[in-house]
Length: 171
Ligand code: CO
Image 1 (cartoon, protein in one colour):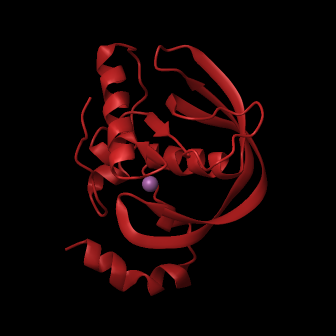
Image 2 (image 1 turned 120 degrees about the vertical axis):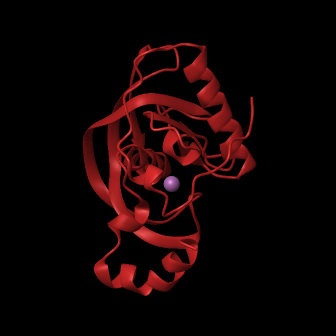
């Protein structure tokens, strides 16, 4: 297991659409382990493979011990391959940040309840519901797999106010 280097905005890698995982072998498990190490090292609650430079549909999430698990929802360390949102409901607004866009935090509105279909690290099908912070985090990470960043959800006015800060990150 190893901590990998993070990819930062405005790298093109963060804008690429990731490819589905098709073989469930030691290589994908090592990627997930390294992503987990990297997430914990950077004190994040979620990480997508493009953030370590790999355009593969893999995400890891751990909301941490302070977040009380909701009954029937996955808790602790969650590793998902080829995750998809199959239904969604409700709206929730919360402040988000991203390890790939340091020092910027903004309110983003997303679905409050989602149903997720995914594969485990062994390639077994998973299906579960998620709400609140877990739902927000899964949507944020799946966005990464589609080349979308949380700042893309901001209004034009909000984004123009961030222009200076974003430009600073481009240096
Ligand atoms: Co992010």
